[in-house]
Length: 442
Figure 1 (cartoon, rainbow, N blue to C red):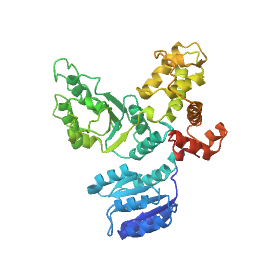
Figure 2: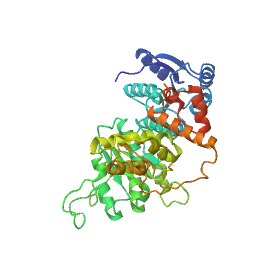
Figure 3: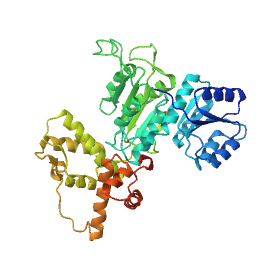
Figure 4: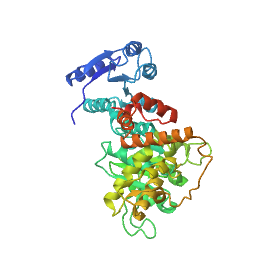
């Protein structure tokens, strides 16, 4: 992939490092500005908030901390920041990524790796304009952008959210956008494996390590290789294994059951849970939680992002029709209205399951409400909509959500479909609490 070029500002007080970066970025075709003081950077970013496509910023500066530069500059500009950190600043760099920094690289670094990070950071500025992969709502676009920022790093990722919100889908997306995509993605459901077998499954065992161990068994940690070890439902991991997982993270190696030989662990750990394992009432080890949540992600429930309902529904149905014989060819308008009114306690998993059942059993070309919600008894509710104005607003809201789903969240395209101006659509979306991302409009 060719490297992106752009307008880059360097904030680095070391004359040798600054000159080296300046010269190399210029050779790569970038337009480069070099600052040596944080106060100068803040002033120029404030005066010209759109002048730069990327700021490469050192964390330790003579007059102010790089974090303070970032926070002050963020008030006036959305310019991405790529931080350069020493080993002692990694925790601070991670905190900055949580606050919106696009990336960080640890000193000393290889120039090739640095240029790749620069190119990736420049591309990330354009990512929000792309069609959403995980969803078209602002919440899921933010998650997608965050996962892209996390992708180059080896630190653990913790994905939290209600059951069915797409935690494993998000983990697989992280795998696909990282350099580890050609390496294995090994998924382990900690709740589905009995506690007395989980250690052997995770770390493997030697032949004869225990009764029934008739041959060498390589565990998930070993099979993950240079890829990703995805530990789903990590909150259900037994306490004794939590301690061994912590040791694995800290030492970067493990032992098979029945062996004293140390095996290096090269994979990246990504965990998921629907439990609040970091809360005061949780029995989950706090020290392990802090290590696993170095790079956190939280997925919103489907009821809080209604823009994604029809977008997901049509994609699920397309996938179902590709692998299964069915008479169904689409989703009817009444069924779409019913889906938009449903609260989806099971989130995206419930949505997919209902569509799979409907596609298998329905005799209609277009799915109807009874096909999707055959288990729910519908009754007339006269108190639900009291006036014609209420009915009109409810219908408008459904139609806007339908248009957004059909256009993958593109505001201008949705407005044209609805026959209204872009400004009018934004006003109606604000009134109805529809939070599609501004960045989704091309």
